[in-house]
Length: 299
Image (cartoon, rainbow, N blue to C red):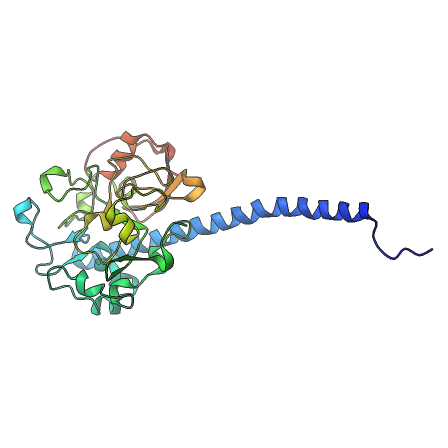
């Protein structure tokens, strides 16, 4: 007699085979996604570093981490660009084809983000995909942070200010990195060598401390023209992107938080292990420390 279908045992065998195939396929797909996210992040940093070098070609210096006039009373140098208020990314926007966005920003008044970010459709609320690490799954909806009626486009990347924790007072910071308030660092000032000096790096939103700024703005706002924290990070603390960490700490969610991407002064982009010795990590962040660098944790 001719059979009309599968037996129960045959069906169970087929289901078991499909389950095994799915179990094998899901991790492979996840690895491909992780590799693609890391590659995209590396490309983002490469474009930001290239923009910084193009800026240097025109102005003969890198842009300031924050251009904030009238800060001499706190020990800072005079702002390179007098009477204008902006952060690192805004300075670089024209060099990654965002010149029109800069034209729509108000930069010549005190506290300009109150005007630039006034509403979800304001210029300061715009999100640039190249400023977002695709591996970071902890951004707020649409990568926009909100504080009252102000809306801020966010970013995963910032410049390296050196070894000191961020402060509003100049003498409380070593200012031994590339970007900080009213900085005007040149390539010639990077005497440690551009290939071993950090220019930019990434940061992670996972497990940020529950402060008003991190909760309200979702981390870091490129249009915030007063907070160095929104534009720079430092090596005062180790790399951390998964466990509880500071707003100014480098880190990522790549490889489960074990690696973070960095752009160096020569424009190259490489990953650094989370387990790098803190002393060696700090040596990478200074421009003229004269230290010997162990590159065993740089990939």
